[in-house]
Length: 79
Image 1 (cartoon, rainbow, N blue to C red):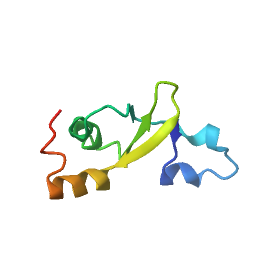
Image 2 (cartoon, rainbow, N blue to C red):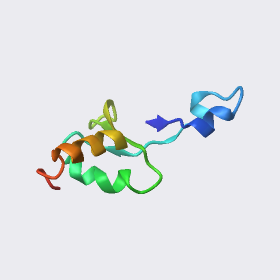
Image 3 (cartoon, helix red, strand yellow):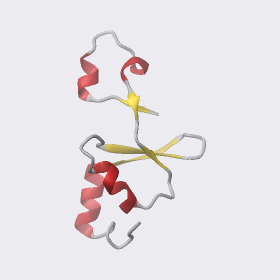
Image 4 (cartoon, helix red, strand yellow):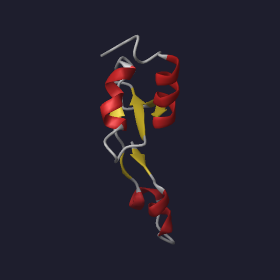
């Protein structure tokens, strides 16, 4: 699983495989609160949720976590 960022797209002629970076991942059973540290590290803006076969099942973004914090959803279910 990889991720491509805006700066990566400034490489004319490059393929996705050539410019993508390894994505931060978590499993579906990972508590949302446990994703906070990864999303607050200044490097990650999204975490790919993958199953045991490394198949993408979802994406959690910084925006998702902020919205959850505003509603208290993450804080009511600590890691």
